[in-house]
Amino acid sequence: MKELVLPDQMAQRVHDLYTRMEAEYDRVASELHFGCEGCPDNCCDSHFQHHTYLEWAYLWKGLRELPVEKFEQVEQWAAAHVRECSRAESRGERPQVMCPLNEEGLCILYKHRMLVCRTHGVPASMQRPDGQVLRFPGCFRCQELVEKRGESEEDVPQVERTPLLRELVMMEDEFLSRRRHLYPKVKLTIAEMIIKGPPMVPLSFCERGCDDENCG
Ligand code: SF4
Ligand code: SF4
Image 1 (cartoon, rainbow, N blue to C red):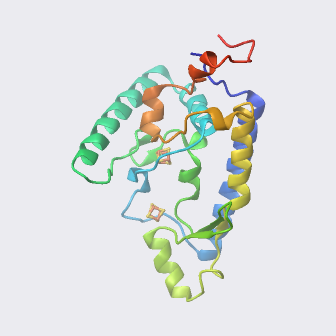
Image 2: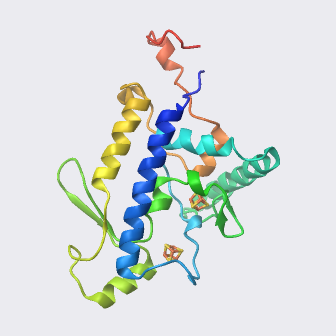
Image 3: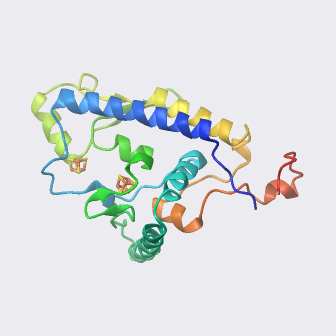
């Protein structure tokens, strides 16, 4: 199978989008006087799955920049993470296992961390394609702050995720050569993305008569 290589120009656009997400997060956090300092929790043990080939490829771009020994260590942590999650799931529990990219409380791939890592914490809203508005209240500490302000959920400072997510989906479509609908859905944790290796063009594309002359 052939790797889905992320061109530099598209990696730069992912970086720009992530930067704008961060700026929005910082704006809301600042308006709420909210920060993670002194928190007894560490959200990097939350169980999240990620859904785009684009973010998967961007994560791998970062992994390839790690020194070899660090990368091998991360692979081992990722394998242990997958085993521990599957043990928790077999007990019918939601896994709560520290992300394999978190070392002593810090993200070792901070520049390449995922969208979820950049938006979790502060209140946010998002409009679904059917028009329904979803609201996310933020983490437990942020909810305490918001409660004290006594504002309605519409008035509270929040990140409007819709335009940012739309842009991500459009870039994903472009990355997948406008054939997003033909690709298997991605639903992977960071650990699983590490263990699986970088994203690949599905084999079934060749069986269907792939029109990419560079397909190898
Ligand atoms: S996002 Fe909230 S719960 Fe998570 S570390 Fe920050 S303050 Fe703590
Ligand atoms: S990628 Fe980084 S910020 Fe995101 S969960 Fe893992 S360690 Fe935390």
